[in-house]
Image (cartoon, rainbow, N blue to C red):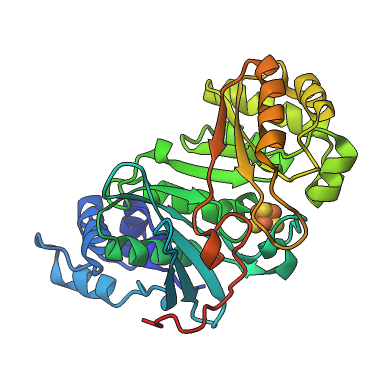
Length: 346
Ligand code: SF4
């Protein structure tokens, strides 16, 4: 596979150039990569030896092509469809934050997804392939450059299970927060997983500064397995051990996501099971409404309030998370490469 500039840390670019017999210093690599991330070209403003600059300018730093942008008229989220070099299509969603002029980007890590969660349109596609860091980061840069304000956060919650493409996602996250890269604060980068247990342990052992979000959604073994087939591979106890290990390593509350489905996973039995499973682990609970893919309905206000009341007994922070982009198939669980008719291509 060819080297792509967007995938390289400065020390790696310097090592590559040295390997070609060029007298490159890490400072040169830093200047060229900073120029690439800031201005779209690795042509450094401050002088770099001509032969080094020429070699770097000849390297690949292309980005995926935008094929469609669709704005949600209600919440002003913007869904981008990108085509990779091989024609594969994936999405990024620009999400306006409460702070005026600030945005977070929801990034895809794969094309399709192998996890087949019952409430998710992406899961119905199956997995086509992993995205390369250059594709993840190229799509990030294009959306960032077009944003009418600052992109201050990134979440790996688009197409794909990020830990199923672990190395590419971690490399991308490192570059997103690098001072010569995306310059996003590491704590504003979130990675979401449905519970790939070995990867959670690895993430904990490696001590990354990014936030991990674990989608639990049910604390009952059979129900969880029917909603998240990944639970057939790793038991809830194994997942709870991994969550506890991560809590010890990050020394902060672990965010547990709970996709709420009306009539399914908001009963007393869930609260009891959750207490048994994670009562000893510092967590915060994010409640997220399911977005319609046809098979599930949202909870009524009464159902939601009843569940929240029961959850109070756990004594953990509970946050209601609202998905943006529902009307344009851009919300959580709705990314399925759906083209919008009559939307502008470019
Ligand atoms: S919810 Fe996430 S992990 Fe599950 S199928 Fe959808 S994209 Fe994949």
